[in-house]
Amino acid sequence: MGKERTETPPIDTWDLSPLYASHEAWEESFENVKKKFWDEISELKGQVASQPENVKKLFHLTFGLEQELMNLYTYAHLRHDEDVAHETHKTAYDRISTLLHQFSEATAWIEPELLSLPEEKLKKLAESVDLSDYKMVLDKTARLKPHTLTAREEELLALGGKALQVSDRAFGALNNADLKFPNVKDGEGKEHELSHGLYHVYLRSRDRVLRENAFKTLHKTFLSFENTLCELLSGSVQKHIFYAQAKHYDSSLQAALYPHQIDTAVYENLISATHAHIDKLHRFIALRKKLMNLPDIHAYDLYAPAAEEIEMKFTYDEAVDVTLEAVKPLGPSYCNVLKRGLKQERWIDRYENNRKRSGAYSSGCYESHPYILLNYQGFLNDVMTLAHEAGHSMHTYFSNQSQPYHDSRYSIFVAEVASTFNEELVFRHLLANAKDKNERIFLLLQKLDGIRATFFRQVMFAEFEKQIHEMAEKHIPLTPTTLRKAYSELNAHYFGPELTLDAELEGEFMRVPHFYYDFYVYQYSTGISAAFALVDKVLKEGPRQYLEFLSAGASDYPVEVLKKAGVDMCSEEPVTALLQRFDALMDQLENEL
Image: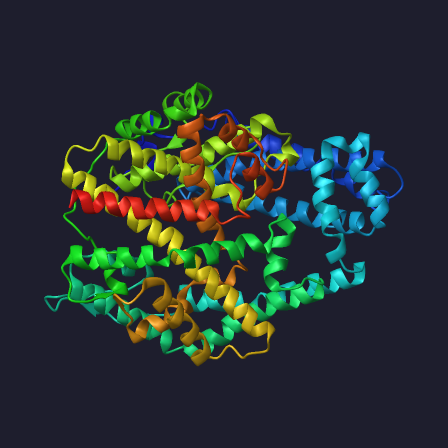
């Protein structure tokens, strides 16, 4: 039996008192917020066109109310995640979630009303001295003007939104609830239950029979529903195309990237630069095959241990010390804050307890310091998770310290940069201080496998997503045969001649929920590319530009924020540099071997 929450020493938990001293204080604030601003915001409806003062008042009221709501939400969701069955905290979380939904409905008129203004008037508002504090908010809104329809047309699109989500929801229901997998046998003939979670456990097993049976059984199950699953994927693609065409974009790819001012060249350069260096992945697959002493290597071999496993164990305090030592190149302004958060201010909820939310995340709100949820076990992966979430938290901390509330929330495009940056610093620190050759081999393989999974695999997914949208835009039916062929050809191209392509691999795309996310996965690859480039810059030139990047928040568009830090994601250079680093790590591994 695990620990109950009440048995956990306070030092191992986060301190939420800077948000609210007690649940009673939260309740009092909740009731007060329900009385604030709502009517004043509604009274401004239809008035924003008359003068800048009305727009300024509207923004002041709306962002002020939103800020208070986010304080309430942050406390409630953190309390809820401590014990998801706790009735008081569960109820509070539901109540604030409902109130946030009501706020969203009550303010849904603001953007359409601003966009209904003539282009010249909207531009004048954005340039107004009185509204200089909200310049970026207005600029982002104004950019959408050419792709905004009449009020009635936008209303119709909104009305159709729920119906157009059916493919995504149906896939989720089938994938998460209805699909059941047969049991699978290991090398000794013993049967094992198979589920989504257990599948990933089995792929990391040294038992090759178990790996193969798990891989083939899971994918055969998906393939047995291939007509349904391909129709669902096709429906999701058609939804993206419908919105793109309705809003006058050149393609569904442009429609997904344009609101964040990300040029389609970023996406296309990512793919073309990877193609130019794909031989490096082929080399790694061949090296893995050799290390595993296999006559042939399959997709189900790519996650299994490739060398002797080293048990690198760390107490929580050791993990904190490793992280703080690794980030020293970022200077005292960064290190002192992080040290205070990890060692004094109790930013982190460290260990598992009964009914605590699984996984890990960084959270917080504008008026609080960051909070990190962990389920720390003491393995190398837990150290990397701590460093990763600390990267997110420090990004949030610097953004909140440097930007007003409405410009503080950075884009998803840059969100993974700071977290991956910290992981890379920790990896370099651990490698430089490895105890022996076996530990170095273990660390190098971990890093190489991470780049294969987080970079190459995600670029392949991004290319598949681009291909199927382009096929649909050309009215080529997305049949099971068409989709299987496209996916199989990409696997052959990316992983090269050494990888044996099992028939079951053709159906892997059917189980990937990210293909319903509208061009999302490429950001994993751009994030890791930018992070590696920034690590090299910091180690050579110092942390000034990187700290400015962390402090930028949403004060500029994400590609521009990275460009100011010295990384141009519109060029192939950051991707090429990462792939050269991948090659150098293989050289290092082969030298150790």
